[in-house]
Image (cartoon, rainbow, N blue to C red; front, side, top):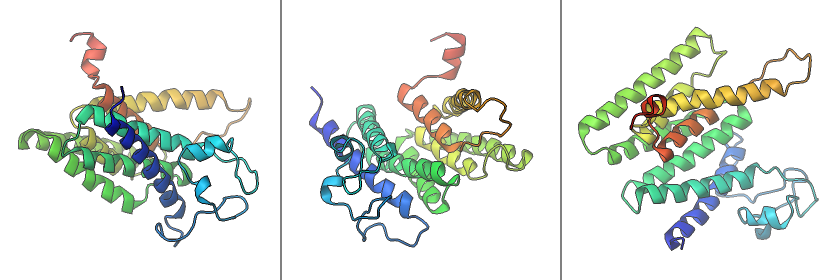
Length: 254
């Protein structure tokens, strides 16, 4: 039987993801996040409460807006399901501990950064700063000793420095400079699997990049520009929740 706490956290995750979507849409537009009713992206009609229930509203409306019948992007319900699932996985990994709250906060900020990067190809500095602070607090609470916390800081710094070097050597063509502090926060969020997660990020990016290139129209010479932040997030979180060790995977030794 699924624990009641897990169900509550899943619902909480979907609600927070819905609010994160509002932040991503309104950040930098001058609109507030708390005040102001949500409206349809197509006809600008004010949405009622029945249209704002995470996941459920999308399913019951068959993915169409109730006001005008326009097709709704599946990004919102998918992100709600994703964050809800991550909240549940976090609970099973950490339990109801002191470190669970900042970890869930970091996951929420991470979702906001990834969605914003997918929409605008940039990471907002305000969200990035809060994410890094939250990740530092999380790693400090996770670390059993000050020496391990210092080691995690060093690992995160080395990963961030490597990405910064890629940015400067490629003159910004390979990746944005903001990916460096973003990876720093991710490394602190996951702790000791950081290096494995870093490698996974490049593997995931390579596979998806090849797929995108193969799907280009025949004869097209245009490049494929995809933000790297989603790959970083996927790689680090995959390493954290699986707890796979890269050395073990390569050598096959326990």
